[in-house]
Image 1 (cartoon, rainbow, N blue to C red):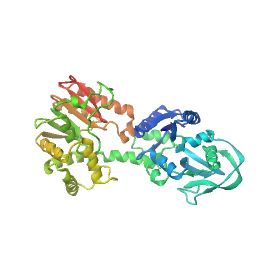
Image 2: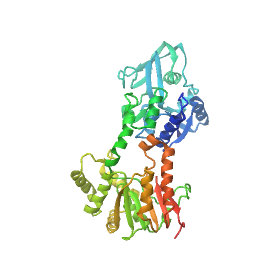
Image 3: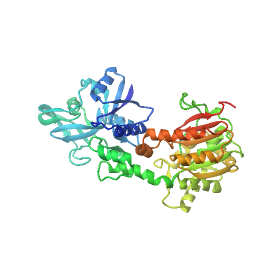
Image 4: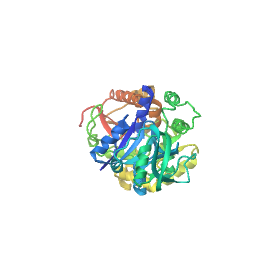
Length: 459
């Protein structure tokens, strides 16, 4: 059985600009291949449709404007399986009964079907008889967010002025003798909900100018996080990258058709961002010589300085990479930001890197030594600035078979939030247009996809 992520558009405003940006961010955060994604404005109808197929085990419902920034929705599924709770979501205990917040929850579709696919929509208040409930004494905040709710013994009458969102589902689960779990702090700390219906004006202000500041407690954390990315751009150093080196390509698509990386052949002219050590396996896999011209570009002077330091002070022995990295940190400003998955161990990240590039330690060091013999130049370039891009491409002297690697420069969280996917796509196309004017065979790689922009497919 499969799992489905349902993006629930429950916004109540007509603002195309804000809606598109919220959707752009949804696409950015939830581009996860192990989840089928469906968007709907009719949540009841969609859940009932999914249930009718009998092919889905769990559904994650994510309201438009809610973003789980650092994690996988499977974490909620795991909580459901570990606790036996068919519903994991933001429990709200007020107004006389329990409900859930529509922003984010996990639902076991087998239990949902057994309950008769109850509606989640709010409805008029009433007095009803239901099972006695027990709840945790602790709350995540205030006095109405219990860690869990479960059925007790016996029944009692409840009087509510309104049946809140999810209230009928909650009652059905409790009547069936099953518990409900709240979202734990370990997940809460990694996600944001912008409450678009309540904060439309401020959200639009921020999307139009990311420097906009707010005192709204529901927005501060997210706005500050995005703004900090911009503030940190010019002092960030990418140390370890597990972005794989292409050994095969997706199905043909794109501007000139995705091509097999094995058809690139020897690289004569290379341009790449300062993405940790990926330049070396990329050159090695395609082929390069001491005559290959290498140009490293980045918006960050700190990243360029780090790459220059490695060339001048390191022999390419990966077993000594951590030591040379520490030496750099001791010699350069303390406000540099070192980017890698530091929640993992250095050893595991280094192992992921070598596995991703499919090189032995000896092969990497040999390639590094060859790289040291190349003419390497360093350039501070903001790839979002069309004038800078034009000047760089038109004056740097592309020749022969060229390979430009931009990694995910045109697909990043902070620029998506600040400018939107259409703006980023236009910036990328500007670079492509400039590259297409260059001589020889011109390749570009971004987001792990390789495209031939000019020249014959094979030598």
